[in-house]
Length: 233
Image (cartoon, one colour):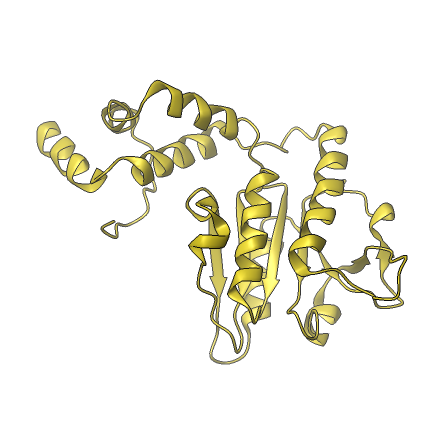
């Protein structure tokens, strides 16, 4: 697909124009998913070594209705593995943070803090709390570290807290995608029970996302848009 600038303003007529190339069934599926989408909980991946693990987490986030995933790149650059995401990557928003001066964590955390997120690093450290004691009473970002060392000391120091899944066996951690699944199942369920007024996307957010998805699935949509603007002029 031809690369285009993100649409910053919603145009109802453009949406309807593109909509004529989408079946009613696909539209109904998108509307159902849109009604469940949330930015109240988000996931941060720090310097993941194996792309298929990060891609599996993206698929998990989509399944639980999360719209945003944040990726902190230090020594490893993340590239989506389409065979693992199974198309999930086109439905979520991926935000990458890389700074040559080494301030990637600060860039990511600063962006999250500005949007009101409380940040928890996932770690089996003695100072971390159990997942059972973590209540999503406010916007929450979970940070998952790489496969070898987990989250960095920098993330541990700059997070608002640490959280872990209690282990009953000899090993002290799950695979990152399994861990993300357990965390998100528990936290999304709890957050919905709180009935936060801003848990689901606003109508403005839905409109922009609806447009993004229409542009994604309509074949040669950039050509249709070009024709739309030509006719509008």
